[in-house]
Image (tube, rainbow, N blue to C red; front, side, top):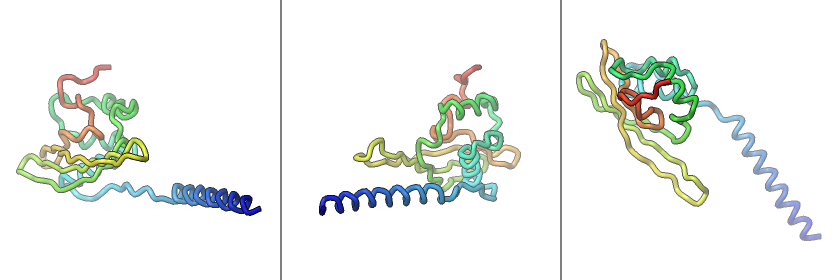
Length: 158
């Protein structure tokens, strides 16, 4: 009789944990929001938000007009085919260092562990922007939100 109560207690605990997990999952807010502003970190933030929201036209509009810029179709295809996968890591956009025509924006890239017994890790990388016609445009970002062959002559041809 005592074992039955213990088993029922364990099962009820599991059910409560499942209900709580489902409630948290379905009530969490989508906290990705565009920001106002024209500073390099604002441009990068809006690019990342657009990519996560799958608004590829808006994300593409933040790219610099430089030689070997990817076509919109190549840009969009990189995300659809998951050769660029922004969900593979968390991003923390840091401070920007500016000159008159270029900017460098710090990124903290947080990688989750692959199993429950490992710890995640964090890398610091930098994105590059150029000022074109008085507006900051992106010329390079970390590879969690950027394909290695954009702005190179090695672009994938369809």
